[in-house]
Length: 150
Image (cartoon, rainbow, N blue to C red; front, side, top):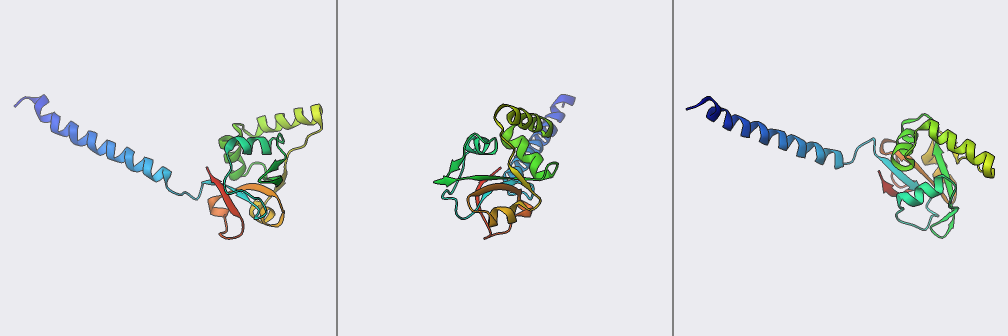
């Protein structure tokens, strides 16, 4: 038996194990994670889901109504894990580029960024027509509704 013939079963075993590991990692990444970002809404918002395009428009103040009424975007405090994840996953920005966007908007049209709250779930619960976001680990079942999981 040649040396390369003996390596073939080992190669197949390693390849199979590697493929299984990748598949398991992909499945785990699709499972619920405490780091998921949940897009949440006050119960008065007449919608069961939202698109990321609508989220961008709402949080950049390009759209003022959603779900049949006026919408109020609620931001997490700057620098928090939820805010950084929202900026990256939804807005496609980091903190500096979001700040730059709002500086430009204030000069051009007087627009200001959405209000920030330390406890976004509580703020969305209490403010009619509001939409916000939080990490899954911050979510309280039955307090607000989930429109999207990122």
